[in-house]
Image (cartoon, rainbow, N blue to C red; front, side, top):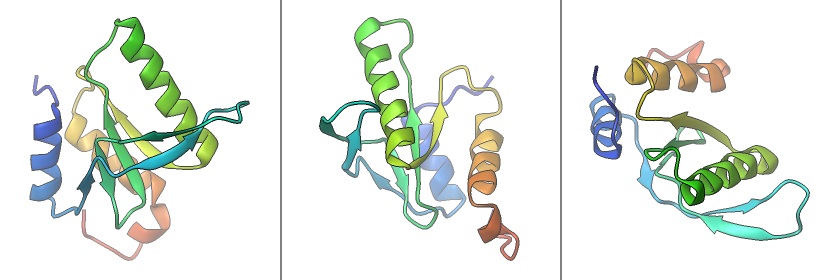
Length: 113
């Protein structure tokens, strides 16, 4: 099985000619809270308005809490994101399908992916 890593994701996006920035800051608001916090997602796909997060650690309480905070914050703030985990099967296909699903209208007239 080809397990994803941040570097493999970056290489894959470059191979597909999908432009991205690394760790672009976003301000998130937690649902039900008045607090705002700056986060730095792994990848931001500028042309698609999508964040990709590689959550490479599971089962460690502090990391799991940070993961939950980010996912809840992206949802609450209305940001589109794709979560990738070490055990995500066929992760390249999964990423492409999620981009297409999130931006369905853009892909009806484009064969970029």
